[in-house]
Image (tube, rainbow, N blue to C red; front, side, top):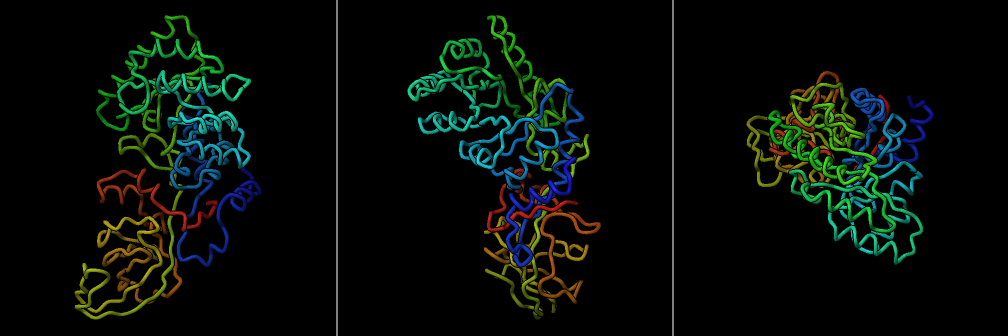
Length: 394
């Protein structure tokens, strides 16, 4: 459990709290929810199974350094990033936990940085392994770099074909300055109610591991499960699970609500002007909304440049004083308009909940995703950094 002092320290040091009370809009990050989610997920795991907190893409827009520190203090032991700069950012913040680079790296500059900052790369192909070995030799790297072998068991993304895993692993074991730290793969359909493809991938992963072990090679660690895989079955957990979405309090699918998670992110904004318009008046660009009656409207200081999808125009709602309010007209770059006729005494500077909970009403990333035929991952990652991230504890 983090102490109040630790919470405040993380909030003050790693979240952009500069004058946020005067901001037109901001993102609130609930550190207590992060801690809660990590502890809930740890309860699903065997004592020896480690949890990797995936904090790529600035922790899905939540703030990588802040989330990483809270996740590690709550029970995570590894961190996952997509790019070399993401890993360096965590190291520069003083984080010493092992960091797996989930994306592929193969340039001289990338490999030099990986070695220098003690990141652990993913190797996807024999050619990439050879480049790593040659580069480490060229820079006189005087240790064995831990590397993670990725197998493609059906995702058709990064990784060597699972049927070629034995030869690939043999090659890496023969290369100087490389040390295999783990072998892993990634699930493509673990969030589907139909387990057919997931089970096929699992069978392929098991077959590849058997092939590697038959050649006399000892595998230090295996990992396979993402958030969905972690929630689906303990058979997929192996030595570690890689959890992203669930740490942020969201479920990969409706049928996977088998653990209590709390959303971490809320988006808030302020009313900047209130006015009355007459029936027949057009609202915003293109007059996509025409007032059918005299109405009170509020202008709110947030728009698509902050991460609200413009395709939600005339479809989304917000929450004010615990009541849902419709957005009207085209969403603009910096502002949206609301029909506040049902709460006529709303004043400038009142706080509007764009995404999150206010009293008994809640609007989630899934609500937006369902309306837009996309996924909650995309919604969470869309909020731009002109919105300050403010650490809170609830």
